[in-house]
Length: 594
Ligand SMILES: Cc1cc2nc3c(=O)[nH]c(=O)nc-3n(C[C@H](O)[C@H](O)[C@H](O)COP(=O)(O)OP(=O)(O)OC[C@H]3O[C@@H](n4cnc5c(N)ncnc54)[C@H](O)[C@@H]3O)c2cc1C
Image (cartoon, rainbow, N blue to C red; front, side, top):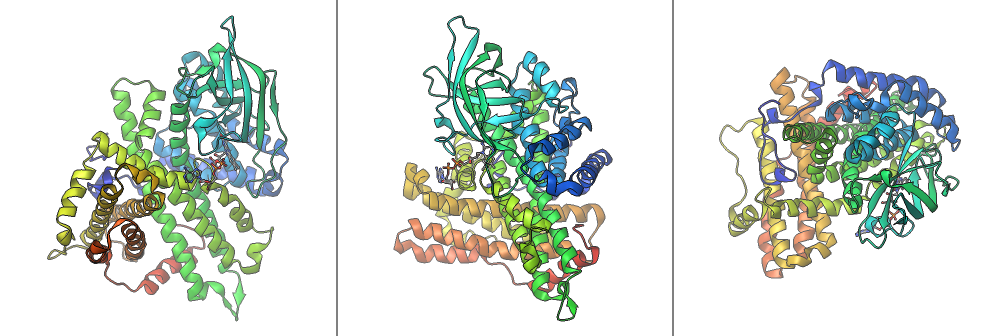
């Protein structure tokens, strides 16, 4: 592990790192690029030529493509070699997830299998369970599913009613209940099912085989998008599950469920990145072919604005994704060095970054929704035609804000987890916030003489962070323990925190790119930084004001208003020219190549 500064989850709110402390995509090695290329070739040859058929409710086709992916070794990327996989780093897993992410329904089926369907057994299974199941899941010989949601237990996942009763001879559990919205249900051979043993108040987890008598899978749901991915209800009627198939310890189910969801959220961030890049390429290709008023529509400023904005948000998301991925890899190595088993080291490393996981999930899914919506718009009427990839992308995108924890739940988690970690002593959030509040009139970090380009941008970010701390301090003081009930204020904070994490990741990446390659003469990457930070000022000002107006007594409003203004003011730039510069590169390349 190189000697670099690594922050704990959420610590970025109170501390700074240098550009050279983060990993950037420009540092992918040849093997990582080769893995991504293999997946891209798979999509180009096996998926896209037959996308209409595969993306249909005929689940046999999806099964065939999954099988092929397994034969090619694509399902073993996250699995250690001793269990039949390739034991790749978390960064590589994320690059693979990004590439797969452009695969519409296939992406959902594949990710459910390799992620939430397989990894609970890899991470929490005993040796016997790993040998029996993981070795076969890693090559696609078995397909997996994850069964947490029930008709009455969605966001409140711990409230499930499925029960498991130990038989008198102590040989098996009798499983009874109903799960719904289960991805891969139509063909999954193994299901990780969450249920409560006897009268337990907490969940346990079980590995259930589809062939066990009493497992009944309903026909597939009719969905808005991802139509080729099987989603169905599963009933468990007196299903006998051998005691050897209890996963982890009794009562450990909720912990397993949550830690797997952290992993799922981060990987969803990578999936939507891949889908965004594809939507941008589809957009620019169309804009470079379609003529109106005798010129290509890509020459219109209004279209350039859309194209540039698609690129900026996608590029910024990418910066945060790989920054976090490397932090996780390092944490996994620390865990291994402390003697943890490989599975535990991985899951603990991922769960450690719960704040950032929730950020990537929410921010990423909303970036894709923005990008694909603009992609449809750039296509005009054709964007509404089922013949076009962007129409499919538009429908497929919407699910990302709902599963792996809705964006409402994840916004709450961003703030709640950061505050809990701070209270636990991981970093000094409240002490710092308190001292800023005492010095409220004088907390803006001022411009220094001879300030460099990046120092200026990082100064703005420092001011945004100070504002977040100030709002946390004010809200905590006003609402005390009841802050958890004030979801609107927590949402305001989550929006500010997400914007800052992404902005900082973008600035540090571009700075590191320049450290490696020298200043980019085209100025395209600096243009992205300029626009992002300029917009971030506005995007942070509004939720800060909303939050403060929701808790501060009128007597303080004037003071807060002034501080918010000072801390979010960013020097004006020519955003039109900056966006045109970015759009012009995209238009010239005729595909996303940043
Ligand atoms: C296509 C698809 C595939 C899926 N795949 C799987 C799978 O493989 N395995 C699995 O177990 N599940 C799966 N799910 C289920 C998915 O995870 C749930 O739909 C999701 O967690 C939301 O639960 P819910 O649908 O019951 O919505 P609800 O929990 O009823 O939420 C309804 C609304 O209320 C909001 N809300 C709920 N609680 C709160 C709160 N405390 N504060 C603020 N707002 C709140 C939500 O954000 C949402 O806007 C899938 C769902 C779909 C649609």
